[in-house]
Length: 449
Image 1: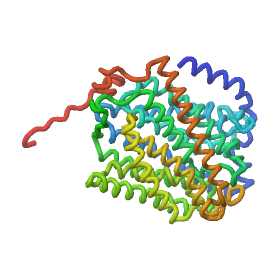
Image 2 (image 1 turned 30 degrees about the vertical axis):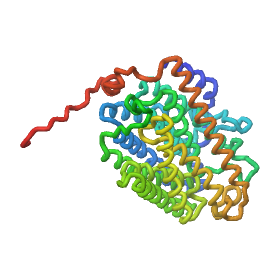
Image 3 (image 1 turned 90 degrees about the vertical axis):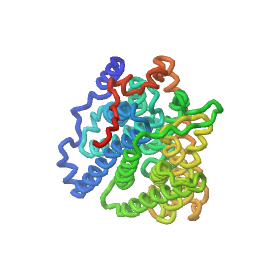
Image 4 (image 1 turned 45 degrees about the horizontal axis):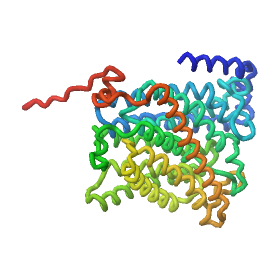
């Protein structure tokens, strides 16, 4: 920890010396130039609050899908994801992502929100982007649940929000090289199917592979066993919270209140989630002759992830189809990983990683050319040719390389330095006792009471 603090101090004094050179820290000049800006601020304030509330959704989903002996550990990880993520993104990540671009690779200004970043508009942008960064970090918590050391997880949380997430985010949203691809209008990701969700999903894949599966996940014959979560009520509540928060996640990404395409974004978001949930329900029934709630919950999340990149660029019919495909991606993705020895307790890799890639590609297929972004975003089915689809493929491949590759390097180094997995005794007893000193409650059944 002392090395982290020393790093922050060095960056502060080297790059933060311009704190007094404020652009408009009070806001009067900004308001005088554009009175409409107060409504824009309100939109971002409400949306940032909704996205922040999604942290509660992730906590409930992970807690419900995992065993009771690890719930305290999961809640602590979700809390620290946001806390450490907020501090590291403020100090380093926001500058790397949105500072003045160095050859389209990373930003080099706005450290600690100092200098020209000490501005009310910049602060509003920061709080909205910071909750996105924390979301990317917390996705990994579910994928590595029930077997990672807490102190190592804290290190991961810092590294991903300070460096890995902002680097790719700069390439897509901060003026980086993916934005400037010569195919179509460049790589497009409206609200973060790739920047947020595929990033978290593929870092989570790296984490699960370095950790290995939980004890008892695979039998002597190598076949996967189902390890049920302890509380389907919590998991269901979490999905409803996430669904609700996604209206801010996607809706707020229009950024300006006068962009009335917001209504289309909200409808598309809802339809894709509904289609994903329904698809997983019926496909599960086809396989198992039973209605699987846990798979349907993940199907809804997959639909939400899939529509996040194309939400502003497609019509309602396309959003339903995107949700259907996302549901199939989630269902078969979870089964594929299970039978390849990848133990993902909550399905995070399939929901966020695989569906995130589908969301990126769907822009290049279904974008209808109505909503402009440096020119209309037009997909293959609407006469745009292959240009936009090529840009989307490049972006999807890039996020896999940096998220999975960067995650493998990060977790491998951490494993060499600290050993990232808890001992077998601690894993079997539960991380709540081993890592947090919290004994699980006794559940007593008493007759006639």
